Length: 218
Image 1: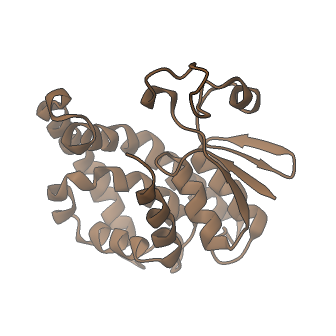
Image 2: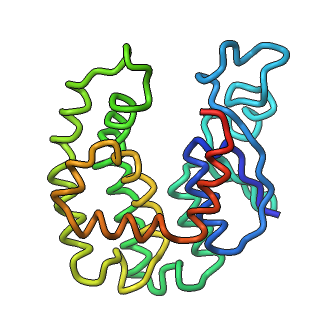
């Protein structure tokens, strides 16, 4: 059985959402980020990214990681590309060209969007108020206007990133774009992105993932 290591309040959410979409049974093994703990190495600390048992599985000390019939893989977006290709079906690329597009959009999200989106998340709602820097958040908003316009144009034809159907590319990009939702002014300028993200979040598999995420401590 597929094993997914990582708490819901982490990038493991991407893999859990996709597993829900694919109908793939999996064992969820909670592994918390070490930085969220007062002492990650304490004897009574929960399993975390510095725990020796987890470091044997992922020496990078990061979540998520999957173990699929003995095959170990790291990096959330790459894991999703692997799972979609392995399972096939409408969420998977249907050709070499579509496989290239799925990789393209996933890498675009990771390189052009994610760091700025995280700055918005952390400095608008994630960090304690005293630790937030509005200048960092505002700079991130400015940096994302051009990439968001690119995404908006790409979605204008079919409402999806590949052909006219929801695929792993949409899921991967939506999970990165979600971090920027604390900047509603970004989305007002890109109506196709706003509509697309709402449709992604209306999917039952996403809702199932988020329901369990909300049960975890922040």
